[in-house]
Amino acid sequence: MGVQSSDRPIRSSSKSAMKPELVRRKEAVEATLTRYRAKPFSWASGITCVHLCRAHLRNMGRKVPTIPRFRSALAAKRALKAGGWPHVAAMLDSILTRIPPAAMTLGDVAALPGEDGLHGIVICAGPRRVFGWAEGEETPKMLQPDMTRMIGAWRG
Image 1 (cartoon, one colour):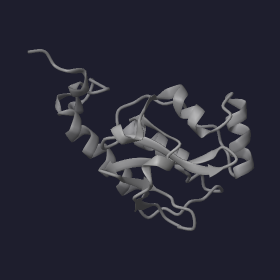
Image 2 (cartoon, one colour):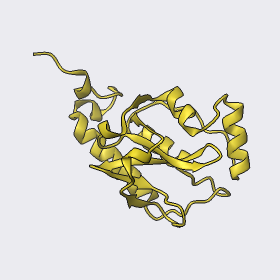
Image 3 (tube, helix red, strand yellow):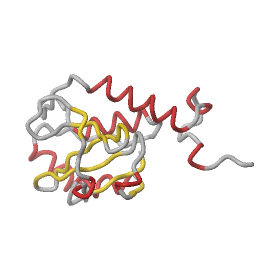
Image 4 (spheres, helix red, strand yellow):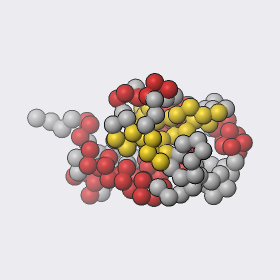
């Protein structure tokens, strides 16, 4: 019986290549949570949901483009426009495969509603649970968003 594509790791050049997909995803989510759990959101320091997403995708073994430097919401909007994306979801569409939010599994990425195309990017950390910054929270938290209000979800 052959190996199903969902069992194959994304990067095969490391020890993670020999791990089952769900174990690899769990380790990537744990590494992302450990790195960002106590970090307050900061435009000035470059600690944003886009940076969280990029670090997570790298933990998942993906090669992801470098993020342009932006230190404000206005600069983030300019960076999106310079990339040819009207909003964050379009940027994620350009690098990841879109899936229905109900199909998310550990390590997938989702976008929550935001203002002016600046959707909040979160990481799936379990059934109906995501990790990321919530409006009014200083540090990222485990959230249980309404799946019907998600802008979209992408396979991590």
